[in-house]
Amino acid sequence: MPMKDNDIELGQSEPTAIRRLKMLERRFVREPDTKDKYVEFLQEYEDLDHMQRVKDEEPGLHFYIPHHAVICPESKTTRLRVVFDASCKSSNENSLNDIWFKGSTVQPNLFDILLICRKYVVAFSSDIKKMFRQTKVQEHQQDFLRIL
Image (cartoon, rainbow, N blue to C red; front, side, top):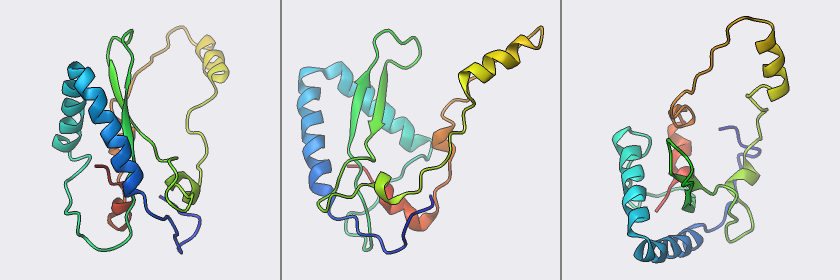
């Protein structure tokens, strides 16, 4: 993850992440089904090695990303998505999105795709499951992607 500056000033993110987690827990009391699906999602994340548990007292720079559930009842495949809020500001008004370079869009324009599909008799479409979670993060940057 290319950063704009090696001299990072992120500020404290843990208090905001704790506050958001408490809000999420209050929601879970009202919506036990949401809690079950949320826990299942995070367990799958851990089982697939897309995240790992760390000791809180590990030294060095770190950032806690707040997260919440988005429910899409009309979705046939994923009714609950967990959204990680990397744009959440820390105590000094910086977020992860502020310190990372923004890459170019990797998806082609929809209009261009439609034009290409008209050139051929047959078109194939596919969905690469969990593609963005397959991205490897350098070990020294993993502490910037913590969650509670």
